[in-house]
Length: 422
Image: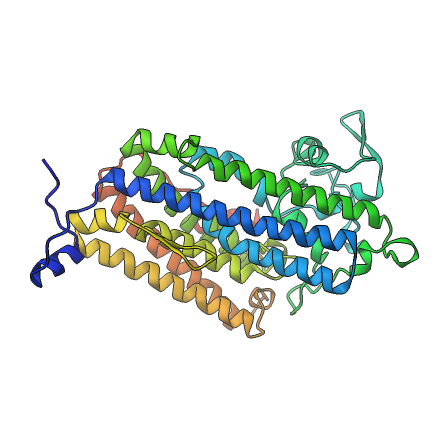
């Protein structure tokens, strides 16, 4: 027998004499979710390939204009990728892979030169100031590693999380970001990193040494990002492992959707990416700390959560992917909860939008983190509170749909604030 529950929109249509629309099935919701994931990763890949072209142009013919073009391409690549982060947590194939492409924060001294105030090796990370670009070899666990050729394999197989230290991030968006912008030495004042284009220049025009190796590292990291995104996009196509795993079990699939929404909203974004940095007044806790793009990262993370609930995604070319959604399932069972969920998502996006527009107007996220800056704290906490509040409604959705045993990621900054300072 077909499901005769009607969504709120279907009831409205019935009142107007239109043909009623049956509520979406879980299978239809999951298929649309997989289509959105595929499109999001395809867009992430396409924008990364544009970045790759800009990086190749910079390395081949360094100039201020080429560096600016590469930076713009990196910023554009973040827009679809951040919307993909909601596919983490509930989808193991994504969560196990994500550290290759978006790990942060990083000990950037592993990669290249840093300011003297950065410090050197520590008990936590002996490679914190390795500067592999300046060193054709180094010792790792008693073994000499040859880095005379900087290749994608060297970055991914040897350097990334070397010595088992998560802060040794050698690959992904943030390694590339550091190589394009350099360190942000402005603290909680306005301003991003300001790496000179001459860090990639040839001969006597080269600044800070090893410009050829710096270019080789940047190119290798970007090539690796593209190949990693090619792999993930393929996992969501018609025969991909991520799609087939999702569609095999409807209950587990719907649970994966809600786990991604709840964990990104609460522990990851509200906690680790926003509340923690505010508690510590530390710009090093910014997600895109070298480029001062954190306001956009927060906004598009939030948008990704909303995309999944509403079952829609606007591609970078403006095309809309849409279909049966979690919203339809909830509205069929409890229309008031669907209205609550949509309202809270909209409230969060307005709060994140205020952070974004204020930063774009000149009051940067760095400044919002300043100790005693009441306006900045209010902006950030507006986003945090919205994300936490929408998580409470996500928990109600989980209960409504009888999905037992779901756990969302937590954060000491929200669950045990005193532990942050221990």
